Length: 348
Ligand code: AMP
Ligand code: MG
Image (tube, rainbow, N blue to C red; front, side, top):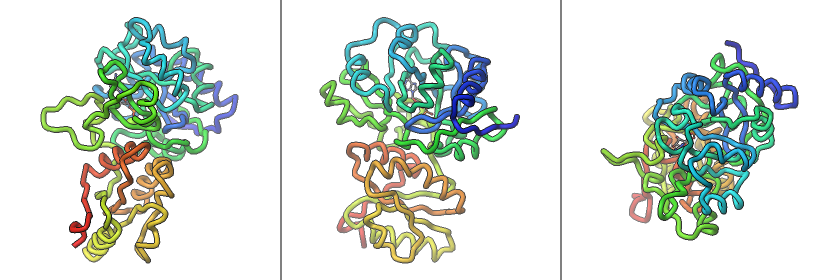
């Protein structure tokens, strides 16, 4: 199959909607990352997403809607008041709510669970596409399973060339990390995957919110993943990555980098903008000035590591608050939780 990449204008949107209605899979931009979309109500079309990604069948997809009216047929029972309040506050936007699913959702979408994740994206191309299809679109991130999520059409092409007929190019994604996944029905509501809508923002609407323990640590032996995606190696560059936190992180990273280079490994440092001068002539790329910038750049940087043949990556930690929690969650998974604490005595 040849893969076309088209600038997301009106005629490209018409073509994408036609393909989706015909049961095909299309790459498209959202404000979080690029998605790989199919008709959410067509199990056979949804199976093509799993094939194109090489995604394990037990990892459910998020269903994307453009209007609140689209939600009622997709869920069992009425929309709970908490979900209504969150939709009011954060939709359209990067928040996915886990709700009891109706019989209309094919088992492929929910990976056999009795719940479904639903989100209303704010990106104009995503909205236009859903409206033009006239049905909800099931879409995971448009990367090959295990690879960093795509934040530009070129990333999607890198992973999906020959696997999907069309990719809509809508420029770089604004948030750059996948949506927040929230189990609204849990008591208290529980963030299963941190993202652009932070726990602090959700707490501002609902009161106390829990963050699932798996956000910042690997699953323990026998522990069931509440958010199935969390059990897979994810977002990983090919080089081995270490995340260093603590007051003396810069010193420690410089040391580790020098050691790796001396051992003949091609190494690279990822650092906050303000710390770049600490690394002198060493190969270092900037995460930007803060967590929001780091979120927007992270996946692009991880792909750049692969293109540059980097074997060893040393990355500064950011504070795990606000959007920083989502950044640390992705860094943890990209680094297989190889975290080092470089506090006062850590910097020997
Ligand atoms: P992706 O769009 O590739 O980031 O994948 C969607 C992610 O959302 C999955 O990996 C799950 O972790 C999460 N998700 C989707 N549906 C559900 C659900 N019904 N229950 C819990 N987590 C879900
Ligand atoms: Mg994904």
